[in-house]
Image (cartoon, rainbow, N blue to C red; front, side, top):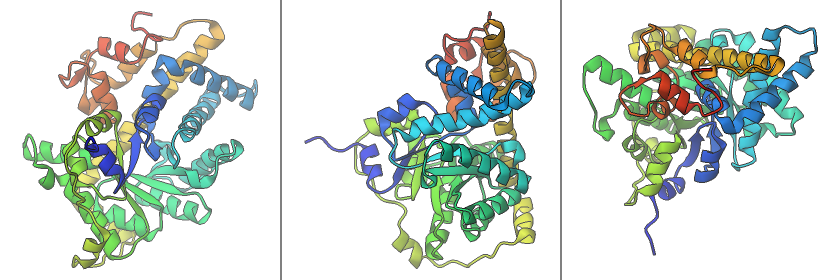
Length: 391
């Protein structure tokens, strides 16, 4: 009898979530839940196998808004619909929930975030998707947390993302949000850059210790908000967080875990957390602002994350606009070329990880030679044969 893989063992103590918009990857690894973000949706929308989904979404948006609607109005509706369309398809595969993200450009506007969340959930409602199967992702700004607090009261469950600090986590728990997604890998990235260190042992990884602290705090004080570690850079981080409520993992790391064997020890445990002495912290806006201002890592990474997801949305808008023009005029869209220009901020002909600022899993997938830069050729190859740089 063969020994179970690390992935199989992890599934016995933690809910495994697929961090991807790629339907085929979800079918392969069979997670319980799935989550997407603007960078992942943008990447998935460019894959040739999803071309019909994109075209059908644009056609639906044009019909829905009518002939007099502006082009921008069609594109805004199409982006919402595309996120819901991918979500609906994912829910036909996973038995649990899918996370769909509110426009990151609304992260500091409570009312606009609530309005967008209600729009997204209304589309799921029309498709007959039960609300308990959808999590609306909102950035963990003070304004986003307040939006989530109200939405939860309306029965719209939320996943608070771009979470880097304990103050954000506690504010979410006190607002009674359903789930939070602390970003392990992005925390590690910041500390490596700020200290000049090349690496950390998994047990000392700053992202791992941050999520462990949040998990123990929640379990110690009986908060019902679920903790889902996200944004992993290596399997060592995942192994150190075995036992966390949920872990959302990219397809390449899921594959590594599926191929690995050995004994997987549970590192996070509610009973142990209950016995861990700690002080309760009550968060109001003044305390949140003070803690956020003094936590340079959380401050910088939250801002950077919102900018990155906003950039991905802007790229998606441009790409859908090109596709819409191609449909209406019969021209092919030079989508890969346009996407490259959006991210190549200094115009040097290569996209660095800092310029990308979106999901690292997408950057790594496009960076074929793993040299830390995406060339125009790598962009074109990664987006599939449907789009070419020389169109």
